[in-house]
Length: 277
Ligand code: DGL
Image 1 (tube, helix red, strand yellow):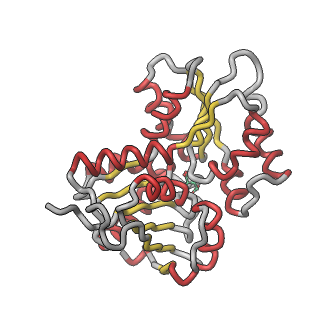
Image 2: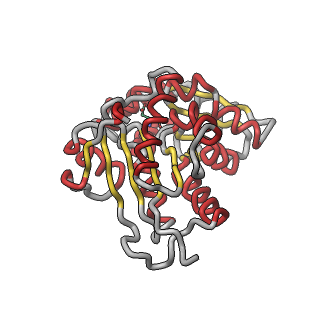
Image 3: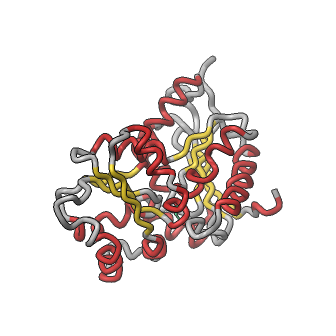
């Protein structure tokens, strides 16, 4: 078989998952991607598990209709509540979430076995990160902190504003003071990697900051290889991305540029309604 030319589907509640797409595209230059941001219904982080599961199923349907060969749930909140459902229920392709790779990165980084995880309310409520970390390192002490306001700040492009630093201090100052402070902070939300400077200013230089983008890209590369789904080297349309959003392509392109780290043309973003799927 000369390689599988079908694209990889990547799904997030909005634009934050573009941080994961960026890592995937860098790691897998021969692949094509379809990215779906459910911008009309963001944030997922404040919604119930049942609601997010219903959204994730609709997003999966759209990506399956696009003929994807693998599904990456780039959204931590959706991964936390719907990965098992999507893997077990009816998805006929491999499904990869970001929680396990993020947990793996945290465990690899810690020296004192104290790990903090910051995420949305929904991700923290379900405890998926704490469980994944303890599965890998049973003696780990895990502290989870919801930081929902970070999502809005990142969406505004306030990556290192006084307001962002104030929010970072509010959420993290107490957690990272004292002799038993964690030595590792897992950014358990798609939006948080762009806030690294503001977070770093509060927690100091000695704490390892990890996110799941790189480790997820590694997990996807392994899964592609394992399932024999890799594209051919030099495949036509290698590296191309088809963007779908459920609200304003203009806003998706403008804000998405911050997360992807390269310009997105508004005309390249297709508007789609998941409610009719
Ligand atoms: N994508 C979400 C996550 O990673 C953050 C934004 C939201 O709350 O929808 O948890």
